[in-house]
Image (cartoon, rainbow, N blue to C red; front, side, top):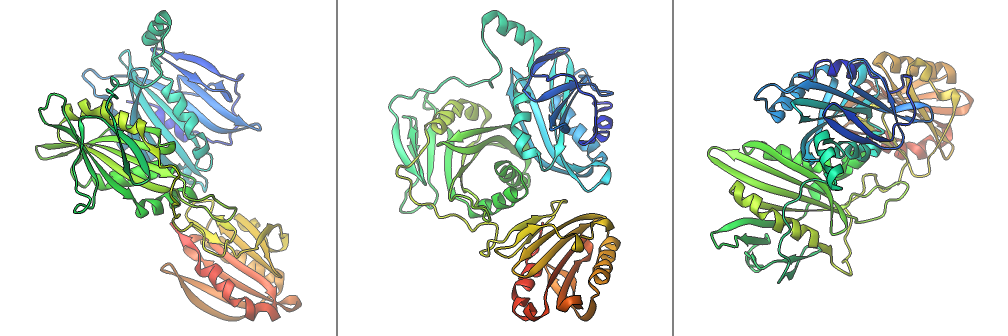
Length: 517
Protein backbone atom coordinates (compact mmCIF):
# COMPACT_ATOMS: atom_id res chain seq x y z
CA UNK A 1 0.00 0.00 0.00
CA UNK A 2 0.94 3.72 -0.15
CA UNK A 3 2.76 3.09 -3.41
CA UNK A 4 4.85 6.07 -4.43
CA UNK A 5 4.22 7.87 -1.14
CA UNK A 6 7.70 7.77 0.25
CA UNK A 7 9.19 8.61 -3.14
CA UNK A 8 7.31 11.89 -3.07
CA UNK A 9 8.52 12.54 0.47
CA UNK A 10 12.15 12.00 -0.36
CA UNK A 11 11.82 14.44 -3.24
CA UNK A 12 10.72 17.18 -0.86
CA UNK A 13 12.94 20.19 -0.30
CA UNK A 14 11.38 22.85 1.88
CA UNK A 15 13.46 25.51 0.17
CA UNK A 16 12.65 24.24 -3.32
CA UNK A 17 10.69 26.54 -5.56
CA UNK A 18 7.56 24.86 -6.94
CA UNK A 19 4.95 26.84 -8.78
CA UNK A 20 1.84 27.23 -6.65
CA UNK A 21 -1.59 28.43 -7.55
CA UNK A 22 -3.72 30.97 -5.72
CA UNK A 23 -4.39 30.74 -1.99
CA UNK A 24 -6.29 27.50 -1.41
CA UNK A 25 -8.43 28.31 1.63
CA UNK A 26 -11.71 26.42 1.39
CA UNK A 27 -13.17 22.93 1.03
CA UNK A 28 -11.53 20.37 -1.29
CA UNK A 29 -12.69 16.96 -2.45
CA UNK A 30 -10.56 13.97 -3.40
CA UNK A 31 -12.64 10.97 -4.48
CA UNK A 32 -14.72 9.95 -1.44
CA UNK A 33 -13.46 12.48 1.13
CA UNK A 34 -13.43 16.22 1.59
CA UNK A 35 -11.33 18.42 3.86
CA UNK A 36 -10.73 22.06 4.75
CA UNK A 37 -7.54 23.96 3.91
CA UNK A 38 -6.94 27.09 6.05
CA UNK A 39 -5.71 30.47 4.86
CA UNK A 40 -2.07 30.55 3.82
CA UNK A 41 -2.02 27.25 1.90
CA UNK A 42 -1.57 27.15 -1.87
CA UNK A 43 -2.69 24.38 -4.20
CA UNK A 44 -0.05 22.96 -6.55
CA UNK A 45 0.89 19.75 -8.30
CA UNK A 46 3.38 17.03 -7.40
CA UNK A 47 4.08 13.78 -9.20
CA UNK A 48 2.37 10.82 -7.53
CA UNK A 49 0.10 12.93 -5.30
CA UNK A 50 -3.65 13.19 -5.77
CA UNK A 51 -3.53 16.55 -4.01
CA UNK A 52 -0.60 18.76 -3.07
CA UNK A 53 -0.52 22.01 -1.05
CA UNK A 54 2.24 24.29 0.19
CA UNK A 55 2.37 26.88 2.93
CA UNK A 56 4.36 29.96 2.00
CA UNK A 57 6.12 32.55 4.15
CA UNK A 58 7.81 35.52 2.43
CA UNK A 59 8.02 33.63 -0.84
CA UNK A 60 9.54 30.48 0.68
CA UNK A 61 7.83 27.13 1.14
CA UNK A 62 7.89 26.23 4.85
CA UNK A 63 5.49 23.26 4.81
CA UNK A 64 3.94 20.82 2.36
CA UNK A 65 0.96 18.49 2.39
CA UNK A 66 0.62 15.44 0.14
CA UNK A 67 -2.50 13.34 -0.26
CA UNK A 68 -2.29 9.93 -1.97
CA UNK A 69 -4.79 7.09 -2.23
CA UNK A 70 -4.67 3.30 -2.42
CA UNK A 71 -7.38 0.63 -2.57
CA UNK A 72 -8.20 -0.95 0.78
CA UNK A 73 -7.41 -4.69 0.47
CA UNK A 74 -10.44 -6.92 0.88
CA UNK A 75 -10.82 -7.70 4.54
CA UNK A 76 -7.99 -5.25 5.29
CA UNK A 77 -7.49 -3.57 8.66
CA UNK A 78 -6.61 0.14 8.66
CA UNK A 79 -4.52 0.00 11.82
CA UNK A 80 -2.47 -3.01 10.74
CA UNK A 81 -1.95 -1.52 7.29
CA UNK A 82 -0.77 1.79 8.74
CA UNK A 83 1.56 0.12 11.27
CA UNK A 84 3.06 -2.03 8.52
CA UNK A 85 3.54 1.02 6.31
CA UNK A 86 5.40 2.90 9.03
CA UNK A 87 7.50 -0.15 9.90
CA UNK A 88 8.43 -1.04 6.33
CA UNK A 89 9.21 2.53 5.19
CA UNK A 90 10.91 4.03 8.24
CA UNK A 91 14.34 3.02 6.94
CA UNK A 92 13.78 5.21 3.88
CA UNK A 93 13.91 8.33 6.08
CA UNK A 94 17.45 9.14 7.16
CA UNK A 95 17.60 9.35 10.95
CA UNK A 96 13.92 8.31 11.31
CA UNK A 97 12.87 8.98 14.92
CA UNK A 98 9.19 8.48 15.89
CA UNK A 99 7.91 11.13 18.31
CA UNK A 100 4.16 10.55 18.60
CA UNK A 101 1.50 7.98 17.69
CA UNK A 102 -2.21 8.68 18.06
CA UNK A 103 -5.67 8.39 16.63
CA UNK A 104 -9.01 10.19 16.70
CA UNK A 105 -12.30 10.38 14.87
CA UNK A 106 -13.05 13.06 12.28
CA UNK A 107 -16.42 13.24 10.58
CA UNK A 108 -17.14 9.68 11.71
CA UNK A 109 -13.88 8.38 10.15
CA UNK A 110 -10.98 6.82 12.05
CA UNK A 111 -7.75 8.80 11.57
CA UNK A 112 -4.37 7.30 12.55
CA UNK A 113 -1.36 9.58 13.05
CA UNK A 114 2.42 9.10 13.26
CA UNK A 115 4.80 12.03 13.86
CA UNK A 116 8.54 11.60 13.33
CA UNK A 117 11.82 13.43 12.76
CA UNK A 118 14.18 12.80 9.85
CA UNK A 119 16.90 14.34 7.71
CA UNK A 120 16.45 14.98 4.01
CA UNK A 121 19.10 13.10 2.06
CA UNK A 122 21.35 13.03 5.12
CA UNK A 123 21.73 16.83 5.10
CA UNK A 124 22.25 18.88 8.29
CA UNK A 125 18.70 20.29 8.50
CA UNK A 126 16.31 18.24 10.62
CA UNK A 127 12.78 17.79 9.30
CA UNK A 128 9.57 16.82 11.06
CA UNK A 129 6.85 14.79 9.36
CA UNK A 130 3.30 13.79 10.16
CA UNK A 131 1.84 10.78 8.37
CA UNK A 132 -1.88 10.11 8.76
CA UNK A 133 -4.38 7.82 7.11
CA UNK A 134 -8.10 7.13 7.01
CA UNK A 135 -10.42 5.06 4.86
CA UNK A 136 -13.63 5.82 2.98
CA UNK A 137 -15.40 4.30 0.00
CA UNK A 138 -13.08 1.30 -0.16
CA UNK A 139 -9.89 3.37 -0.38
CA UNK A 140 -7.12 4.38 2.00
CA UNK A 141 -6.29 8.10 2.06
CA UNK A 142 -2.72 8.96 3.09
CA UNK A 143 -1.92 12.47 4.29
CA UNK A 144 1.68 13.55 4.74
CA UNK A 145 2.79 16.88 6.18
CA UNK A 146 6.47 17.87 6.01
CA UNK A 147 8.29 20.86 7.46
CA UNK A 148 11.48 21.58 9.36
CA UNK A 149 11.78 20.61 13.01
CA UNK A 150 12.04 24.34 13.75
CA UNK A 151 8.63 25.15 12.26
CA UNK A 152 6.79 22.00 13.35
CA UNK A 153 5.69 23.18 16.85
CA UNK A 154 4.13 26.31 15.32
CA UNK A 155 2.34 24.33 12.58
CA UNK A 156 1.27 21.35 14.69
CA UNK A 157 -2.18 22.84 15.34
CA UNK A 158 -2.66 23.73 11.67
CA UNK A 159 -1.91 20.14 10.58
CA UNK A 160 -4.28 18.85 13.24
CA UNK A 161 -7.03 21.24 12.10
CA UNK A 162 -6.82 19.96 8.52
CA UNK A 163 -6.99 16.31 9.59
CA UNK A 164 -9.93 16.91 11.92
CA UNK A 165 -11.87 18.53 9.08
CA UNK A 166 -11.80 15.32 7.01
CA UNK A 167 -15.16 13.64 6.34
CA UNK A 168 -16.58 11.36 3.70
CA UNK A 169 -18.42 12.99 0.80
CA UNK A 170 -21.44 10.86 1.69
CA UNK A 171 -21.41 12.32 5.21
CA UNK A 172 -20.88 15.81 3.81
CA UNK A 173 -23.98 15.40 1.60
CA UNK A 174 -25.97 14.17 4.59
CA UNK A 175 -24.79 17.12 6.71
CA UNK A 176 -25.79 19.50 3.92
CA UNK A 177 -29.30 18.04 3.83
CA UNK A 178 -29.78 18.15 7.59
CA UNK A 179 -27.86 21.37 8.23
CA UNK A 180 -25.61 19.63 10.77
CA UNK A 181 -21.85 19.12 10.91
CA UNK A 182 -19.89 15.94 11.52
CA UNK A 183 -16.53 17.68 11.86
CA UNK A 184 -16.45 17.31 15.62
CA UNK A 185 -15.46 13.99 17.12
CA UNK A 186 -18.26 11.60 18.03
CA UNK A 187 -19.37 12.08 21.61
CA UNK A 188 -20.80 9.66 24.15
CA UNK A 189 -24.22 10.40 25.68
CA UNK A 190 -24.06 13.10 28.32
CA UNK A 191 -23.81 11.95 31.91
CA UNK A 192 -26.41 12.74 34.55
CA UNK A 193 -25.04 15.75 36.44
CA UNK A 194 -27.58 15.79 39.26
CA UNK A 195 -26.56 15.32 42.90
CA UNK A 196 -22.88 16.07 42.35
CA UNK A 197 -20.50 16.47 45.31
CA UNK A 198 -17.50 18.83 45.13
CA UNK A 199 -14.14 17.14 45.83
CA UNK A 200 -10.61 18.55 46.18
CA UNK A 201 -7.44 16.74 45.09
CA UNK A 202 -4.04 18.32 44.45
CA UNK A 203 -4.82 21.81 43.05
CA UNK A 204 -8.12 20.71 41.50
CA UNK A 205 -11.77 20.89 42.45
CA UNK A 206 -14.19 18.58 40.63
CA UNK A 207 -17.68 17.14 40.86
CA UNK A 208 -18.48 13.53 41.70
CA UNK A 209 -21.88 12.10 40.84
CA UNK A 210 -23.85 9.70 42.98
CA UNK A 211 -22.24 6.59 41.47
CA UNK A 212 -18.75 7.76 42.46
CA UNK A 213 -17.41 6.87 45.90
CA UNK A 214 -14.24 7.61 47.84
CA UNK A 215 -12.12 4.46 48.03
CA UNK A 216 -9.15 5.38 50.19
CA UNK A 217 -8.27 6.44 53.73
CA UNK A 218 -6.18 9.63 53.78
CA UNK A 219 -4.68 8.52 57.10
CA UNK A 220 -3.42 5.20 55.70
CA UNK A 221 -3.24 5.43 51.92
CA UNK A 222 -0.79 7.56 49.96
CA UNK A 223 -2.73 7.52 46.68
CA UNK A 224 -6.20 9.10 46.40
CA UNK A 225 -8.67 6.73 44.73
CA UNK A 226 -12.30 6.96 43.68
CA UNK A 227 -14.51 4.20 42.28
CA UNK A 228 -17.39 4.50 39.81
CA UNK A 229 -20.17 1.95 40.32
CA UNK A 230 -22.56 0.77 37.62
CA UNK A 231 -26.04 2.22 37.94
CA UNK A 232 -27.45 -1.29 37.87
CA UNK A 233 -25.40 -2.15 40.95
CA UNK A 234 -23.69 -4.99 39.06
CA UNK A 235 -20.14 -3.91 39.95
CA UNK A 236 -17.59 -1.23 39.32
CA UNK A 237 -16.99 0.48 35.99
CA UNK A 238 -13.71 2.29 36.62
CA UNK A 239 -11.36 3.62 39.29
CA UNK A 240 -9.71 7.03 39.35
CA UNK A 241 -6.19 7.23 40.80
CA UNK A 242 -4.39 10.50 41.48
CA UNK A 243 -0.59 10.37 41.19
CA UNK A 244 -0.14 14.03 42.06
CA UNK A 245 2.59 16.27 40.74
CA UNK A 246 5.34 14.42 38.88
CA UNK A 247 8.81 16.02 38.96
CA UNK A 248 10.23 13.42 36.56
CA UNK A 249 7.64 14.39 33.95
CA UNK A 250 8.51 18.05 34.45
CA UNK A 251 12.14 17.26 33.63
CA UNK A 252 10.97 15.61 30.40
CA UNK A 253 8.84 18.69 29.73
CA UNK A 254 11.88 20.97 30.04
CA UNK A 255 13.79 18.96 27.45
CA UNK A 256 10.76 18.98 25.14
CA UNK A 257 10.46 22.77 25.43
CA UNK A 258 14.17 23.23 24.74
CA UNK A 259 13.85 21.11 21.58
CA UNK A 260 10.78 23.02 20.41
CA UNK A 261 8.56 19.95 20.78
CA UNK A 262 5.06 19.53 22.19
CA UNK A 263 5.73 18.84 25.87
CA UNK A 264 2.47 16.96 26.49
CA UNK A 265 3.03 14.70 23.48
CA UNK A 266 6.57 14.00 24.66
CA UNK A 267 5.38 13.16 28.18
CA UNK A 268 2.71 10.85 26.81
CA UNK A 269 5.17 9.14 24.44
CA UNK A 270 7.56 8.36 27.30
CA UNK A 271 4.72 7.04 29.45
CA UNK A 272 3.61 4.78 26.60
CA UNK A 273 7.15 3.40 26.28
CA UNK A 274 6.88 2.20 29.88
CA UNK A 275 3.44 0.68 29.38
CA UNK A 276 4.61 -1.18 26.29
CA UNK A 277 6.81 -3.24 28.64
CA UNK A 278 3.72 -4.37 30.59
CA UNK A 279 2.09 -6.25 27.71
CA UNK A 280 0.62 -5.66 24.28
CA UNK A 281 -0.13 -1.96 24.00
CA UNK A 282 -3.30 -0.99 22.05
CA UNK A 283 -3.92 2.75 21.53
CA UNK A 284 -7.60 3.70 21.62
CA UNK A 285 -7.46 7.45 21.01
CA UNK A 286 -5.75 10.68 22.02
CA UNK A 287 -7.31 14.08 22.64
CA UNK A 288 -5.74 17.44 23.36
CA UNK A 289 -8.08 19.47 25.50
CA UNK A 290 -8.30 21.90 28.40
CA UNK A 291 -8.68 20.56 31.93
CA UNK A 292 -9.26 23.11 34.68
CA UNK A 293 -8.43 25.79 32.12
CA UNK A 294 -4.96 24.32 31.55
CA UNK A 295 -3.46 22.50 28.58
CA UNK A 296 -3.89 18.75 28.88
CA UNK A 297 -3.65 15.53 26.92
CA UNK A 298 -5.95 12.53 27.39
CA UNK A 299 -5.06 9.10 26.02
CA UNK A 300 -7.17 5.92 26.06
CA UNK A 301 -5.39 2.60 25.76
CA UNK A 302 -5.61 -1.10 26.49
CA UNK A 303 -2.89 -3.47 27.71
CA UNK A 304 -3.20 -7.17 26.92
CA UNK A 305 -1.29 -9.45 29.28
CA UNK A 306 -2.04 -13.10 28.75
CA UNK A 307 -5.79 -13.54 29.02
CA UNK A 308 -6.21 -10.26 30.92
CA UNK A 309 -6.99 -6.91 29.28
CA UNK A 310 -6.76 -3.63 31.18
CA UNK A 311 -8.25 -0.37 29.91
CA UNK A 312 -6.77 3.00 30.93
CA UNK A 313 -7.45 6.66 30.37
CA UNK A 314 -4.27 8.64 31.03
CA UNK A 315 -4.58 12.33 31.87
CA UNK A 316 -1.65 14.77 32.02
CA UNK A 317 -2.37 18.39 32.96
CA UNK A 318 0.17 21.23 32.61
CA UNK A 319 -0.46 23.89 35.25
CA UNK A 320 1.63 27.09 34.75
CA UNK A 321 4.15 27.43 37.57
CA UNK A 322 6.26 30.47 36.65
CA UNK A 323 6.55 33.03 33.87
CA UNK A 324 9.45 32.55 31.48
CA UNK A 325 12.11 35.23 31.25
CA UNK A 326 14.41 36.05 28.37
CA UNK A 327 17.05 33.68 29.69
CA UNK A 328 15.08 31.13 31.70
CA UNK A 329 12.41 28.73 30.56
CA UNK A 330 10.27 27.00 33.18
CA UNK A 331 8.30 23.82 32.76
CA UNK A 332 4.70 23.85 33.94
CA UNK A 333 3.77 21.75 36.94
CA UNK A 334 2.63 18.37 35.54
CA UNK A 335 -0.21 16.58 37.32
CA UNK A 336 -1.03 13.00 36.42
CA UNK A 337 -4.12 10.90 37.05
CA UNK A 338 -5.51 7.71 35.50
CA UNK A 339 -8.86 5.97 35.07
CA UNK A 340 -8.62 2.15 35.22
CA UNK A 341 -11.10 -0.51 34.06
CA UNK A 342 -10.83 -4.28 33.72
CA UNK A 343 -13.43 -4.77 30.99
CA UNK A 344 -14.05 -3.06 27.68
CA UNK A 345 -17.80 -2.74 28.28
CA UNK A 346 -17.19 -1.19 31.69
CA UNK A 347 -14.66 1.25 30.23
CA UNK A 348 -17.04 2.34 27.46
CA UNK A 349 -19.94 2.63 29.91
CA UNK A 350 -17.81 4.84 32.17
CA UNK A 351 -16.83 7.30 29.43
CA UNK A 352 -19.73 9.74 29.97
CA UNK A 353 -18.94 9.93 33.69
CA UNK A 354 -15.20 10.30 33.02
CA UNK A 355 -15.84 13.09 30.52
CA UNK A 356 -18.20 14.84 32.92
CA UNK A 357 -15.61 14.70 35.71
CA UNK A 358 -12.90 16.16 33.46
CA UNK A 359 -15.27 18.88 32.25
CA UNK A 360 -16.03 19.83 35.86
CA UNK A 361 -12.40 20.18 36.96
CA UNK A 362 -11.22 23.64 37.92
CA UNK A 363 -8.28 25.09 39.82
CA UNK A 364 -8.60 25.94 43.47
CA UNK A 365 -9.15 29.66 44.07
CA UNK A 366 -7.07 31.31 45.24
CA UNK A 367 -4.54 28.93 43.72
CA UNK A 368 -1.83 28.04 46.25
CA UNK A 369 1.69 28.97 45.22
CA UNK A 370 3.18 26.32 42.95
CA UNK A 371 6.94 26.29 43.23
CA UNK A 372 8.40 25.80 39.76
CA UNK A 373 10.87 23.08 38.89
CA UNK A 374 14.39 24.37 38.24
CA UNK A 375 14.58 26.09 34.84
CA UNK A 376 16.46 24.51 32.00
CA UNK A 377 19.13 27.21 31.98
CA UNK A 378 21.59 27.59 34.85
CA UNK A 379 21.55 30.47 37.36
CA UNK A 380 24.01 32.48 35.27
CA UNK A 381 21.11 33.34 32.96
CA UNK A 382 23.38 32.93 29.97
CA UNK A 383 22.41 33.33 26.37
CA UNK A 384 21.80 29.88 24.91
CA UNK A 385 23.01 28.47 21.60
CA UNK A 386 21.20 25.38 20.28
CA UNK A 387 22.96 23.39 17.58
CA UNK A 388 21.37 23.26 14.11
CA UNK A 389 21.30 19.45 14.44
CA UNK A 390 19.40 19.84 17.73
CA UNK A 391 21.86 17.62 19.60
CA UNK A 392 23.63 19.94 22.04
CA UNK A 393 23.26 23.24 23.92
CA UNK A 394 25.90 25.82 24.85
CA UNK A 395 25.04 28.25 27.66
CA UNK A 396 26.97 31.50 27.52
CA UNK A 397 27.71 33.69 30.54
CA UNK A 398 25.22 36.29 31.71
CA UNK A 399 25.65 39.50 29.76
CA UNK A 400 26.99 37.92 26.57
CA UNK A 401 25.58 39.55 23.44
CA UNK A 402 25.53 38.11 19.96
CA UNK A 403 27.32 40.16 17.32
CA UNK A 404 29.14 39.65 14.03
CA UNK A 405 32.90 39.41 14.03
CA UNK A 406 34.06 38.38 10.52
CA UNK A 407 37.64 38.09 11.73
CA UNK A 408 36.68 35.12 13.93
CA UNK A 409 34.14 33.55 11.59
CA UNK A 410 35.57 30.39 9.97
CA UNK A 411 32.25 29.38 8.40
CA UNK A 412 33.98 29.37 5.01
CA UNK A 413 35.36 26.04 6.18
CA UNK A 414 31.83 24.67 6.04
CA UNK A 415 29.17 24.95 8.74
CA UNK A 416 27.65 27.69 10.89
CA UNK A 417 29.28 30.18 13.26
CA UNK A 418 28.13 32.67 15.91
CA UNK A 419 30.20 35.26 17.76
CA UNK A 420 29.36 36.94 21.07
CA UNK A 421 30.95 39.72 23.10
CA UNK A 422 31.33 39.39 26.86
CA UNK A 423 33.20 42.14 28.71
CA UNK A 424 36.42 42.51 26.67
CA UNK A 425 36.25 38.97 25.31
CA UNK A 426 34.94 37.61 22.01
CA UNK A 427 33.38 34.14 22.10
CA UNK A 428 33.17 32.04 18.93
CA UNK A 429 30.87 29.03 18.51
CA UNK A 430 31.24 27.12 15.25
CA UNK A 431 29.45 23.96 14.12
CA UNK A 432 31.01 22.12 11.20
CA UNK A 433 29.94 19.45 8.77
CA UNK A 434 32.92 17.22 9.54
CA UNK A 435 35.79 16.77 11.98
CA UNK A 436 38.26 17.88 9.31
CA UNK A 437 36.42 21.20 8.93
CA UNK A 438 36.82 21.81 12.66
CA UNK A 439 40.56 21.14 12.56
CA UNK A 440 40.89 23.43 9.54
CA UNK A 441 39.04 26.17 11.43
CA UNK A 442 41.48 25.98 14.35
CA UNK A 443 44.40 26.28 11.95
CA UNK A 444 42.70 29.23 10.23
CA UNK A 445 42.21 31.01 13.57
CA UNK A 446 45.86 30.51 14.50
CA UNK A 447 46.95 32.03 11.20
CA UNK A 448 44.52 34.95 11.39
CA UNK A 449 45.50 35.83 14.98
CA UNK A 450 49.19 34.94 14.64
CA UNK A 451 48.66 32.62 17.58
CA UNK A 452 51.35 30.40 19.14
CA UNK A 453 50.30 27.47 21.32
CA UNK A 454 51.50 27.76 24.91
CA UNK A 455 49.77 24.79 26.54
CA UNK A 456 47.37 21.94 25.78
CA UNK A 457 45.28 19.65 27.95
CA UNK A 458 42.28 17.32 27.75
CA UNK A 459 39.05 18.08 29.64
CA UNK A 460 36.21 15.68 30.32
CA UNK A 461 32.77 16.95 29.26
CA UNK A 462 29.88 14.50 29.64
CA UNK A 463 32.14 11.54 28.95
CA UNK A 464 33.90 13.22 26.05
CA UNK A 465 37.63 13.95 25.97
CA UNK A 466 37.90 17.53 24.70
CA UNK A 467 41.31 18.95 23.71
CA UNK A 468 41.68 22.48 25.11
CA UNK A 469 44.56 24.74 24.06
CA UNK A 470 45.87 28.11 25.18
CA UNK A 471 47.60 30.38 22.66
CA UNK A 472 49.47 33.68 22.80
CA UNK A 473 47.98 35.81 20.02
CA UNK A 474 48.97 39.07 18.37
CA UNK A 475 48.27 42.47 19.94
CA UNK A 476 48.71 41.15 23.50
CA UNK A 477 45.78 38.80 23.40
CA UNK A 478 45.16 35.23 24.54
CA UNK A 479 43.19 32.62 22.63
CA UNK A 480 41.53 29.54 24.16
CA UNK A 481 40.12 26.80 21.91
CA UNK A 482 38.09 23.68 22.76
CA UNK A 483 37.36 21.28 19.91
CA UNK A 484 34.55 18.75 20.43
CA UNK A 485 35.77 16.53 17.63
CA UNK A 486 33.00 13.94 17.36
CA UNK A 487 30.32 16.62 17.73
CA UNK A 488 31.92 19.00 15.18
CA UNK A 489 31.82 21.90 17.63
CA UNK A 490 34.55 24.50 18.18
CA UNK A 491 34.45 26.94 21.10
CA UNK A 492 37.03 29.72 21.04
CA UNK A 493 37.57 32.71 23.36
CA UNK A 494 39.76 35.70 22.43
CA UNK A 495 40.52 38.21 25.19
CA UNK A 496 43.29 40.53 26.47
CA UNK A 497 46.14 38.49 27.91
CA UNK A 498 46.10 40.34 31.24
CA UNK A 499 42.42 39.43 31.78
CA UNK A 500 42.87 35.70 31.12
CA UNK A 501 43.59 34.71 34.75
CA UNK A 502 40.39 36.32 36.02
CA UNK A 503 38.37 34.85 33.13
CA UNK A 504 39.47 31.23 33.61
CA UNK A 505 36.43 30.43 35.77
CA UNK A 506 33.75 31.45 33.29
CA UNK A 507 35.69 30.03 30.34
CA UNK A 508 35.81 26.64 32.07
CA UNK A 509 32.09 26.80 32.84
CA UNK A 510 31.40 27.72 29.20
CA UNK A 511 33.26 24.65 27.92
CA UNK A 512 32.32 22.07 30.57
CA UNK A 513 28.72 23.31 30.64
CA UNK A 514 27.93 22.05 27.12
CA UNK A 515 25.03 19.61 27.38
CA UNK A 516 24.36 16.82 24.88
CA UNK A 517 21.04 15.09 24.19
